[in-house]
Image (cartoon, rainbow, N blue to C red; front, side, top):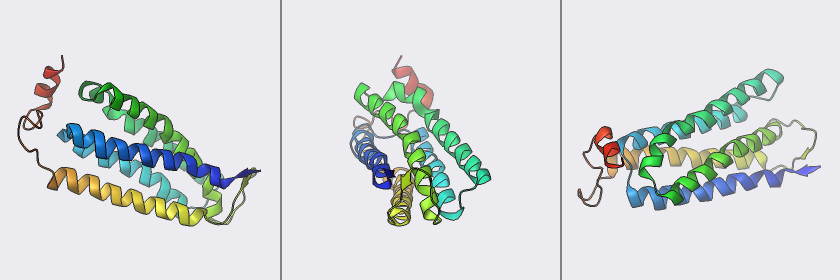
Length: 180
């Protein structure tokens, strides 16, 4: 049997690398308006998947909904990548590729943890009793991150000056033109 503790690994990796992306790269280059608005929506798609696992027991029908929510989330987070290519350093772009690879693995891991949340067994996974608390804590951290993304980048953060943030006040087309 496969121990459920191994399903935590993708969550930890994603948490660490999203932290690097957010607190190093985003603060280093700052975020244009399309990212300040779009990133919280990315987070909402993940929360939709996780809330589904907490509140709805797995059945053949609800698993289909979860798969649909997960596919939508995986596709939705790709929406900005064409524009990211123009604004991010190569290393940040590679980090995004790594995060895009981890994203479905995290959602699959959550799917494997899902039966334990509702006192059900799942063939080859050996549940150990901590899974419900783990997902509740994970959801709580993500909700706080959503709050931070929304409030900090849209209401608190201000560019220091035009030299510090060359995108301040520039329209998307002006920003894009700079990179051609």
